[in-house]
Image (tube, rainbow, N blue to C red; front, side):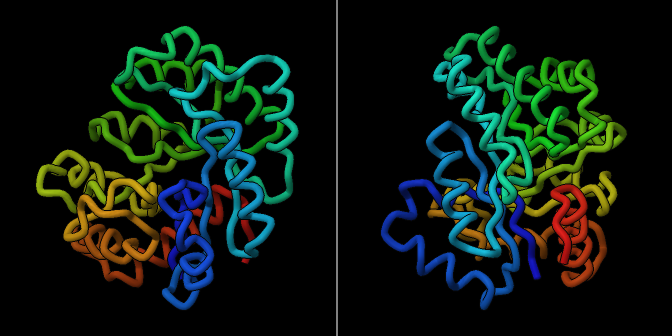
Length: 256
């Protein structure tokens, strides 16, 4: 069964058919879904989904673009959510310099706090990093987050950077971009990173793969991504699905 390691089914894009979609996952060979928080409210909704569906797990965290909402009081609330039995990771957290706001110092402050939280409760991190390659890596290294591990989701940097993360014990999240005609850099990453360090993800409802690019994404597109990885690495589709499922189980500490 395919392990969907990163989706946002709490997003309003799924308001009309969320239940039907989730209830049909397993008949479509999607065995597990991690619904990832990006704000305080989406963290709460992710946990609610995980409580409702046995095969859904949650990640709790605040995306860098939402860190302006954090203060000591609501960060205490977030810490409590992270201890929930179905919360398997802290995320998505990180740095995003594409936008001017929030200020980089605000992002760094709360990234550091969430990294330390992950170490305190011994759960892996889901990293979002955009236009902030050096600062993200430097902070992860400085906080010794390799001891809990995690994944750099929607990886968008160089092969060299990917291998540095792998050396730290991290996984590389591969989604629909690997199918894009202009996705050459990510194809090179997939070629170079051991399959034992790759996770399948969609980032639904975003980043649908070819030939569905531009439409609402869902976990039903994961076979397209797995097939592309198999092609790049000279493996069978079933091998990619099996190994990436085991990778996800190991990172998220989910037993069969």
